Image (cartoon, helix red, strand yellow):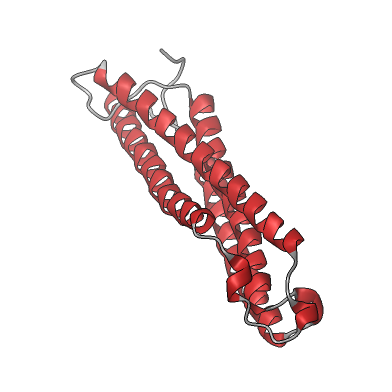
Length: 190
């Protein structure tokens, strides 16, 4: 058993405390479910990318000097494997946290959604799962940049199509990751 409830705010009455704790536990389980579901999609995408990767056959550039070499192919595989590892890590941490919450809930039959769990452990688990998801996205972004270079041409060649594609990818993914990181840390301040 843990030392404190998940509850982040203190309540004056016992009924208020139980209601707040039960809704907080339910929210954490739902958030962990979301992490697992998103990571599952990313993990499948990365695994399919690794399985069917044959980059030399599909280069669309006309200039031989702009074709990506084996170093870009190697980086692509390395980034995909690292991305896969972070998504798997994140999913396993989230699943472990859900399992702990559900096991603690099963001990108290009268309070279905209430779990006494150390809030520091819960925060560490959520940050670990979210951090794994963010790092998986970063390495997935790097692997997609390598795919773009393999298919359209190297960034160093200055092709406007390659530069605009990579720029749009980096801006959109970075914006989404920044928002995700902000909401994770904001949720701990409430």
